[in-house]
Each structure stands twice: as structure tokens, then as C-alpha cells.
Image (cartoon, rainbow, N blue to C red):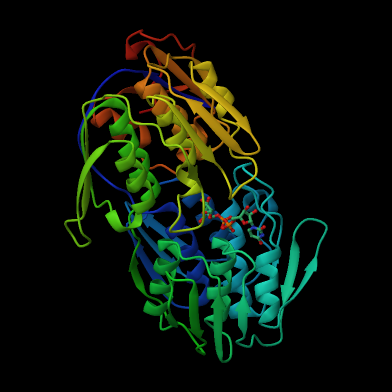
Length: 440
Ligand code: UD1
């Protein structure tokens, strides 16, 4: 167990490159199972969740090589055995092997999948969509067995635009007989990335990135090369770091069009930024004098293009310093405000009821020992720590490693006083770094 230690109050300045998106690379890796060829995936972030997904694929006999940010997946020997429950249980996205295994092998046995404890996260929408293609799902003691004689395209209406259910359906339907039309599909940019990858493999998917996706099944998919999109949640987290700490941050590769809900909220909060449209020179630059933001009276998380649930904790952290009362309601997951009690330890004035936080901005936060309850909440506590006076220790910091590549290193390069320390060493804030076994 590692801690992240932050001596807050430093301005942040400089340039960082946004890494490849966690939520895009995981489904793309799963989609490689659709082919018996070799896929080369570029711009792969070095994250714990990606390492776990590599292990899941290896359990299925994918031959993997991973050098720098390039993953090579040779899927010629894949067999649809049940991966070890211990590995599956480490991330939620391991459930994304269901669609491709069903598409290619017509069967999949999958144990219970894990992930952050932000809600119950059932699989009913995944199952309903796949059953509409003809699949049968049998519950097992832990997990389930899915099988089908032949998948047939169908007209499907998702009861809710679930990201994972849309992805599983896209992958299964890519190898079904006939055409599938998915209504009320999730429209997240990561879905468009997945569809672009499947199309690069020879698939025929149109409409991904909108709420209606058409998938014309093909008989076979080939290996392909693909570059993963930049991470919009890392982008958003760093934008808010810049806004909270003051200074000027240039986020190379950051895509304006993927972050409109957050940027609208930042504009309303009085935070200045500039950006360049897509292409090789895409960037977003945030510039802040470090003054307190305006409060935001009504932030409600919603499916894309609404305000992303994965940015809710970080925005809540920023609003702790606003000049007045804000309200943030979480409507995607039922257990995503547990970090509020940790922010209170740092002097935040927040009340949480019915999945909504009422935040009375304070002039400053102070350092404290806090515990990251999950990935994005961990990032929110880090933002609060960067802006706070004094020293903050974030326990269970390994949650942050699940979704942020080089989190500590990137913030260090921008001028933050932040370090990672092994749990086995005593943490004494303010002591020289040499006193600790630094992992960075
Ligand atoms: C993905 C993202 C996650 C993000 C979330 C919402 C990945 C790897 N993870 O998660 O970071 O927070 O989208 O943007 O891409 N639901 C059901 N039944 C289902 C499926 C989902 O009730 O069968 C519910 C979930 O419990 C949750 C909501 O729908 O309350 C959204 O879930 P979903 O969109 O499926 O999120 P994930 O794909 O798990």
C-alpha cells in the first residue's frame, strides 16, 4: 500500500502530454479477441488496469508483447477457457471479453468481475442486449456461462445507455449474421474509438458516437493497427489542477470536443482556457491567477455528452474553494460521494444527501491524512491536497495508478511538491525526500 504525499500551495506551470485513454484501450484490447490475427495498439497508457487486462488476455492464450506505449496482441491461439476469477475480479472491464468471445467462439464462461466500489454495477443490460442476438446466459455460482448457436442481428433498445453494454453488443454483433441496430446506445467518444478499431479490422459499424449505432455483421475480422484516443478524464483532472492551483498548463493532445461539459462548467466558474481543434496539434491550455472560482449551482452527472460521472469527484473538490454555494448531484452511480467525508477532514464544508453534495466554498483547505476510496475520488483528494495549505497524505494511493499514467511524475514536472512513499516508511511531512524510500 502506497501513500501520496503533497505539500500544497504550489503554482503549476508547464506542458504535459495527455496519455492514451484507459476507457478506450480496455475495450479495444478485448476487441482484439474477435480476430485470429495480430493487433498492434499504439498510445497505450502504462496503468494497472491495462496490466490486469493483459493478464486476462494471456489467460485466454493471447500472446502479448508490450514495449513503451505499443501493445502487440497475437490472437491466433485464443481459446475460450474461463479466465482465473482472481484476475477477472481485479477490474470491472474484464467483463468486456464477453461480447468478443461470444462473437468468435459462440461461448464464454466468465467469473465475477471487479472494479471500484462506486455502485452495484449489474450486467442485466449487457445480457438483455446479447439475448436479443440469440445468446443464452446461465448464471453460475460466481459469474455466468453465455452461449449461442449463431448470433443473429436484431433491432435493440437499451433501457439505459450503458457504456459497457454498448461495447459488448458492438463486439458480439460485429460477427453476427445480418444487421443489428442499437437504439439508446452510449455515445461516449470511447465507443467511437472502439468502433473505429473494429472497422479497421474489417468490421462495418456506423453511427458510433451517437445514440443509434448500426452494425452489419461480417464473417471474419482481421488483425489491425490502431492508435488509442487521448484520455479525456486525465485531461479534465489536470485542467482542474491548473484551475485550483493557479498558473498555466498546456495539455498537449487534449481534445476540446471530448470535454465540452467540463469546459462549460469551467467557463461558468470563471476559469480561462484556450484550445485548438482536433488534429495533431490539439491542445487545451488553462490559465488561472489562482483566485477562487464562482460556485456552480446545478451540476448533475449524466451520460455523454452530459457532465461525466468520472469528473464529478474532481469538480466537487474544486467547488470546495468556490465563492459561494454549489450543488453536485451524482446520477450515474449510487455510491460515488464517499470521498466527501475525506474532503471534510481538509476543511471542506460539504453536506451529502440523496447522492447530492451541497458545497459551501471556503477560502482555503488545509492538509490532512485522507484515504482514497476509489480511483477518481483519489484524484479529487490529490487536487484538494495540491491546492491546500500544508501537507496532505493520501492513503490507498494505488487506486490512482489504476487510471492515471505517471500521475505523480506529471504533477512533479509541473512544479507540484508531490511524492509517493511506501507504506512501510513513516511519513513525516516537510522532511527532505531522501528521508523516504521514494518510488518516483
Ligand atoms: C464505464 C467506464 C466508467 C464510467 C462509466 C460511466 C470503462 C472501463 N468504465 O463503466 O469509468 O464511470 O462507464 O460513464 O469504460 N448498469 C446497469 N446494468 C447494466 C450495466 C450498467 O444497471 O447491465 C448501470 C450501472 O450500475 C451504472 C450505470 O448503469 O449505474 C452506468 O454504467 P455503465 O455505463 O455500464 O458503466 P461501465 O461500462 O461499467
